[in-house]
Image 1 (cartoon, rainbow, N blue to C red):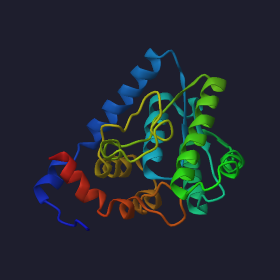
Image 2 (spheres, rainbow, N blue to C red):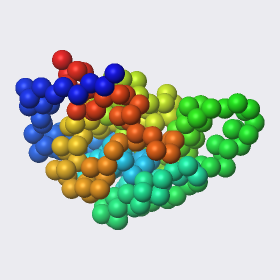
Image 3 (tube, helix red, strand yellow):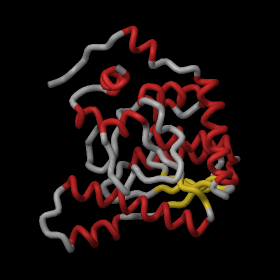
Image 4 (cartoon, helix red, strand yellow):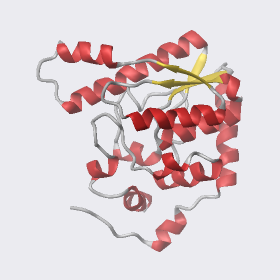
Length: 223
């Protein structure tokens, strides 16, 4: 079943004051990172809108010299995703590192006969977070989350994978609000306008998985 109805009233209610949201989330990051005893942050940068927005916010909070973005490609990752991650890194002037996860993922896959695409996707997500938390310790940098409220409410993520973090600045923003704030902060249009995807399976999109759009499901979740 595909749900397409959109309510103008609910769309209006999901609209946020982006200036206020920016101020509140930057202060939130400054306070939480300081309370935890850190001065630096690290996060995985997938090339998607959620990690891009988290990256923009934490860079505003700490300064580019205190942010490390990790590109964590698998052989199945799209070239577009990597290019879009580079757009963010170059725009913000932050530190970055690329760590290939293909070897560690395929080692487990080869030792696990019958591993399907769903299982491998979870392994990929957890391999990425393993690298991020390792760099957190190495760099004394707090792990920043990249999961929006829509994903969290739907359970659309991998436990101990992309859902893991120390502090998540976008966890109270619905996906449509993530788009609003991303546009206001100057996240590249190429990232904002593309179809959201976990990039775990070639050609997969979030909305194909759901059977409805983020715009529609956000209104249902907001009720």
